[in-house]
Length: 313
Image (cartoon, rainbow, N blue to C red):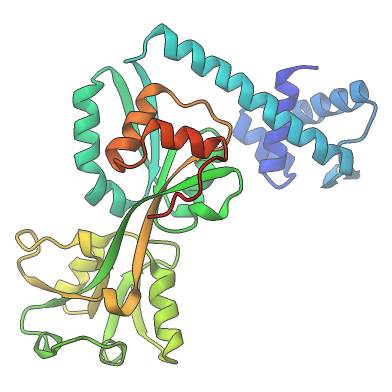
């Protein structure tokens, strides 16, 4: 039995049993993957995959059990490597953060600056994507930490801890009629074209749910993953914008005005997630605590062990 065989099996499962995609991801050939998995089946004496001709159509029951064990073995192998890295040099290495544009642009600069001052020899990488993509990056070992508002707490393989809470605001051009209102309502917002986040980002589900609860259909004319893009099109007069309050800056956005909208869309929670069972480098714990001071190493370790009563804010 070889670790390579287990890696091939894991990647085939990740790619929905598509051998071609797995081969492309692993920079190898489809026949090579098929051969290695067949050799593993011969050694274990059971079928792992169900094949119809050249196509893999499903995984057998023993195959699913074997996959779970293979994933634990591969995780423990990576954990052993992490222990070696940690004790060779606790102040050097790599840390990859998977996050959304809004987090990278507005909440992380302070954290990254403080982290780099403390660990100048650590190579820090920021990868951006939508929340499901970020979750998959951490699960696949392509990132150490994911930070997002949506989706991270829906993945059993991830430990998603509450980082901080925030609320939405409505951004409008100067002299907009909404600025004359004492308190914005959903009925008022529904009268205007709306520019806001893509459905996978930044509390968009709360926005949609709020309108639906009032049986209102918002006129969303443009969706974007980037708060700056939303503000740009609001400035151009295409509509009003609904964005995270953290993304509005009075000085930088001097041609826009913000209207508080927390009473309309509720409070969002941005979460920071790591893979369950993963061994974290010491500086990864420091990054997490810089991001959310309540998430000390002791708190994170207790959560990874399944201890403690609540990790919500």
